[in-house]
Amino acid sequence: MPKASLHIRVRGRVQGVGFRAFVAQNANLFNLTGWVRNVGRDQVETHAEGTQENLERFLEKVKAGPTVSNVKECEVEWGEFHGEFKNFKVRWF
Image (cartoon, rainbow, N blue to C red):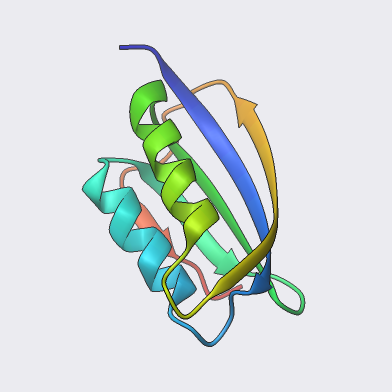
């Protein structure tokens, strides 16, 4: 199965609603590595690596978000797999 990386920037009601925990939970569910963090106002950024198939499934979950969130915009950038992460973490900055 081919591997890749995925960088996502989400805007909307995504802070104060458990969005980062939701992203981390799904990343772990799909065996992805990388990170998620808050950036700016009403923005969350995540970078994940893993199989193309699992990244696609993860992207659909991130676009939907948890039920109390409201994703208004989602910027997606695909890239090459680098294997630089050992697990998936919530970053605080």
